[in-house]
Image 1 (spheres, rainbow, N blue to C red):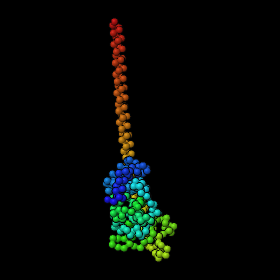
Image 2: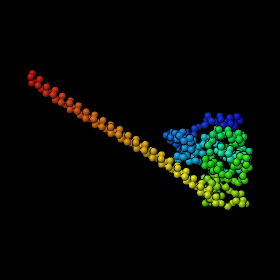
Image 3: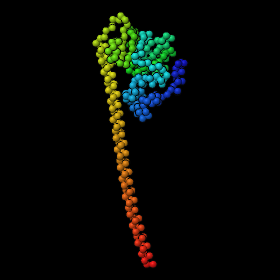
Length: 288
């Protein structure tokens, strides 16, 4: 095991749990964390995936929290870019398997790699593939997914495609309105070099943008549906609890009424006995 891997392993024991960090940042409470863990156990999803799907935190919120957990840099979508040197070091198959994208090679020779979900196993695999000099950063998962679906990376055994600067941004509509670049699918913005003959958008580009927007709206609708389902579930639980408490109060009221009636009967009996005692005393006094 190399030094970088050993250092990464040593830090694992001191790492704060993701659920704890999400609670500290106000995205979850203990009840929602338990619910998210139960859902993940049923669906096989990771905790962060459940939290985002349920609408309790955004992808960027999750990415920032993961970056803090692993003591890595968080990179916003608008700041993500790639160069050909970095992309040539990993095939599409390798990137898909590791859910990672090589972004660029820094001046000191380190390969900057974008991840959405850091894990010890992923770090070890990246070190084995790219060597010790890697600099991992955390980005939103949809940015990774968009890059993996694009033609940025070569397939195994094929040469790397012609590379142009690429930026993954959060809002495709805003970039389209500004005319800042040519858009690929799922939030990928390709900015051609000066003099590039492919600087005009094609019909397929617009189709990809429309597909991206449709997928984004579908994801938002899924999140809203999850929120509505959760609200309905909470309301139903509250309704059942109110009914239970109301029935319990009614039972207690009936019990108190019964006890009041019993006390009234006892008071009547005591008064009757006192009356008889007074009559007996008067009778004895007259006889004496």
